[in-house]
Structures are given as structure tokens and as C-alpha cells.
Image (cartoon, rainbow, N blue to C red):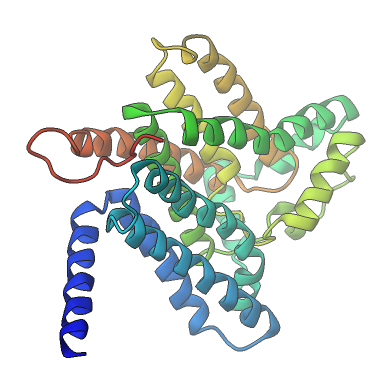
Length: 322
């Protein structure tokens, strides 16, 4: 029995050592993010939202940590199975962390900071863009910008899902490292600077004159939105980051023709965030700053970790082949 206990302990130490050796920077970011969210909700006042959020937050932390041990610790021996487990274990919890925000942010019972954000806009611009954009309140413009705002979700799917399973090498490493940084930083700031946006704070002369696409936006925000998730604007950060990433690879297919399309789409989405009264200017400005920071971060990380798995480097590649 003693020998069995020692054997299990030695195996656990071995797995822990291999896991620590193989952890990539993006793994550390994901684990730190989930641990931070777990800590925040653990000390939040008790409420039905807090109880539900604690369950979801703990589940996402456990799934992520387990995936790291199984893959980076090389408990899973088959490389393809390990690569698939890693992709799902890292990516899926970060996707579901958006939905946990709907429970988490109200559960934290923080004071909304909309008037402080509005004050920054007044100091910078003398107003906030949503106010002077009221002059554009016609059905064609509302529908045009609502279409792009709603299309944000399609952009996320098109840019991330195929790449997760089909892309490889440096391009995959850059894309996912930057995207992960945006998610972790954005959601962290949501817990520090909660707000509902101009539509819930200011009195406008008229409601927006939209129809189908504007209705789709309203339904989506009402049913799936986190409600207090405005600072920074991830509707700004992600499309801008994708455009920067595509521009950085504009000499390679498919980005040699796709980068101007992504830039055009990003511009329209960013304008829509303010025109549709969801965001203050400062939300968008910080979202843009986050996009540029993520792009620079992704390049530096790819250069730093690009040789993992090569000769004389015993660490796992950041993304093993499927």
C-alpha cells in the first residue's frame, strides 16, 4: 500500500513538472483569468445570481485546469487526441465565459460608472458620439449599421472556428494569443468598470428608426448580452484586431484579398457601437488600444515561443497538429 502511495505521488509530481514545463503564455493567461473570476464571485454577496455564477465559474475553471493537466502534462499520450482536447479545453471555456458575465456582473453588485465614462467623453469631445449621431437616425442608416453590429458574431465565428481546427504554425499562434488576451483583458475590465451605455443613461429625442436588423440586435442584446459589458468595447477590439492581423499577413492567402474587407467591416461595426447607443467614445477608444496591444502581444509571443518542440527544445509546441 505504501509503495502504491509513493508511486501515485511520484506520478503526480512528474505530471505537475511536465505541465509546468509545457505551459504556454496563453495557457497562463487563461488559467489566471478563470482563477480571478472565481475569486471575484467567491467573495461576492450571496444572491441567486451569485449562486448560479459560482457554479458556472467553477465549472469553467475546472474544465480549463483539467485540460491543461491532461494535455500539457501529457497524460493523454496520443498526439491528435491531445491536440483536440487542448483546443476544446482552452477555447470552449473562454467562449462560455461571455455567458457567465450575464450572471457574474449583476452578482458583483458594483456601481455602474456610466456618468464617469460620459464625463470623460465630455472632456475629450464636448459630447458623446451617440448624441451628435442622432442626426443620422433614418431607417436605411439604422438598418445598415445594425446589420454590421449583428454581423460581429459572424466575424468571430469565421475568424476563429476554422482557424482553430485548420490553421497551423505561426498564424494560428498569433491569432489565438491575441484573441485570448482581448477576452481576458476585456472581461477583467468589465468587473472593474461596469456600465450600461448611453441608451440606458441619456435621454434621446427619438428612438432609433430601424426594422428587421435593428430588431435582431435588440433581441440578441436582451437575451444574451451581459448588460453591463461596455468598457472596453469588444465589438471594437475584436474586429479591429482581426483587421490588423489580416493586414499583417496581407501577402499570404486568403488575407491578400480579405484584409480590406475585414477593415471595412471593422469600421462599420465600430461606428455602429456608438450610433446604436451601446457605447461611449471612451469604450471604443480603449477597445482600439486593446486591439493594437493584442496585435503587438501576439507577434512578440509568437517570436518568443515559435521554437517550442524543435530540436533542443523539449517543450510541446504551443499548438500541436491535429
